Image 1 (cartoon, rainbow, N blue to C red):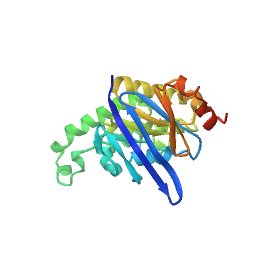
Image 2: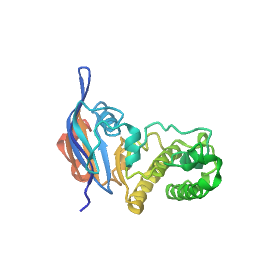
Image 3: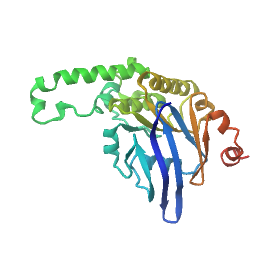
Image 4: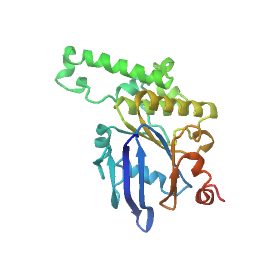
Length: 253
């Protein structure tokens, strides 16, 4: 049985008199695709922001691979292997698809002022980085678009590029914020199919916030449901969707 890669323990977060998170606890199993759902204002985005280091919780802990990472800044979590995408992609618009992935590589010797002027220090590393990026583009179905400026891509393709950038960091856990929001149904299913391929071939773990249940339910292993800042239930999708609490809180009864 796979171990938990992420553990959220009694996380609370308030903004003034608004309690966005009220003692939320959950465990994300490694090498699985998990989804977090809930009505608007339930605290989903706040929870993702706490996990990814954008917010510091008022109380509680976040454990990543059993290490207490509570309050770690995003760059430190990035180095540890936690990647994050956002609902609205933020690419380097004038760079090509390939270049957008290359800039995400960690510890590139060519970024050193002294080493950058002597090619023998970075030439082999640069070749390995390009090969790595090409492999990721193939897994994401973007190989034919490698030389296209990112501003020419569709919304769904942009979201795949964001996932690709996270993979360049050798991420083990990817937090995805609505990866198929605003994407046509055909490409939405393709994105989730690619996520499953990444899980199976690279052993990655995905924790996804998504409203498009008509698409996502076919692909996820585990579901978590929030309402009013609390986790109200979790489990396999077929069980969760038949839970009366979910019907009342999320589907409107």
